Image (cartoon, rainbow, N blue to C red; front, side, top):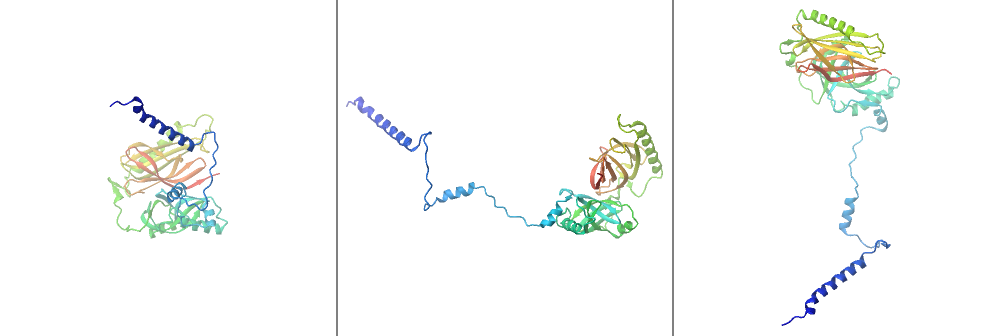
Length: 353
């Protein structure tokens, strides 16, 4: 049976016709680019599909956040804006005896409280609500007089600093009545613990804090005087700065690893335009080793004292740090390997304007 060529081409012709109809219908549905199309709003009685409503809710971007409970009133918040609390990550606070009270420095107050009793009361109230020690009632104190757990009995302002007032132990209270200078470091405590057990870090590596070799004080004095002479003769300020310098030497005895004393000699101009500092460690045999103090902005150190602030058997160095128009009480920790003192805690800062 013979099939004509026209019969064989018939399916292709039908397919081309279907494609042409589809393109014509698509062109009828899609308007041209230059043609304006008006879209009418849906009727009021039309109801949008549920899927469309869900999509619109997901794309709205609205966040539903539960508001936090308010702690301070508007008046208390204005007072809190004038207080600079210690950072929340700070775990160690400087403790010092001031006006026969044991105080913990927790921030700076930029408000006038001496002549305004109502504002002072508001500062105390704000410190008890949102201060760095507001959620604890006890602090663990390691000081130059020993180790104890003290409770916080209130808050106050001392010399522009926001302080927590501690209820000291009987021993510390007797020293405070004698105006003995006390220094320490406090850490937060949620629950008080028993501190009647003896301090196991009292003697580490053969170092007994209460016992000093008889010849050591004389040797430390010789080292200090020699270092003072060298600093006076060798360290000079650059040209153009005042030539009159203040040179000071301080010493402290303690357990600094293999060393039993530290000597710090500083020289500076009166306005702190220039300053230098040299440090030596003295062993029980009288031999010396150079050391270095790194204390951020504080450039010179004086009025030294040694005590174990962290219970590891190696004493920390407490000092009065000074810089240009400022100062603070600082506690430095020694790394026996590198013979470098670095900041362990700092507080009771002051500024001169």
